[in-house]
Image 1 (cartoon, rainbow, N blue to C red):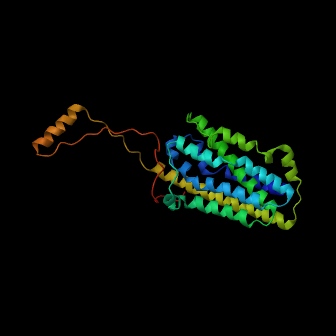
Image 2: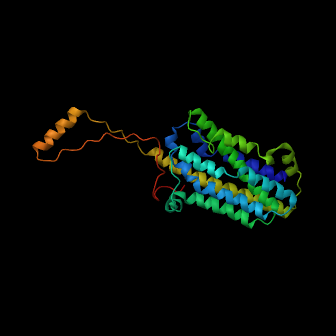
Image 3: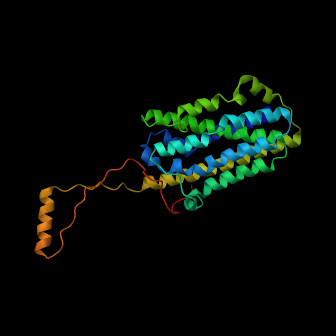
Length: 275
């Protein structure tokens, strides 16, 4: 498995250079990243089933114990995610939106990764799948946690926080003795080849999902921000009402714009780039 782990690290290093993470390094205002939390919904929820299927289908005791422990350690993180959406003022997408164009890339990646859990012929490949997803998760949670700390995010988050990263790094599979035990596993040529190809496919799907998220963010950033409306004074409103009355028109009702916190709602509809 040492060769398999080295292959994962190579992909992890390439993934860490993704434009999405480069964007985070520039510390944009969080509202300019608005699509990204919601666009992870399908993946986050499906991930729990990937863990479950790998656990249920593992049979060899040595692999079974590691896969089962991994499932237990990641259980409930979907609830952390939904709690963070609420803390950020975002609503989870409704079914019609979740299966629309905006979330197509996340569905593609999630279902492909789920299929890897279903069709894996060896427990070594099931463990490889989980190790691969964890390696990508380490990049994501570390970059996001550091970004949120730099911009001074004060909302109480769990999924997107340093706490989550610390939990991920404390997983049993990353303990020195467990890591050494995984490295010592000997694979035949056929199983090793299947595991290496699985890693390639997983990172291709994960990269595609983040390509789509980055495209949505870039498209939003390219649109000019709307200038805030300036509330008119009472004198200006009275003058307009007088002019309207002189023309025989009904007085215009003036409403002061209501300022809302960032992203009270997740974007609705199927427009935009897939995410």
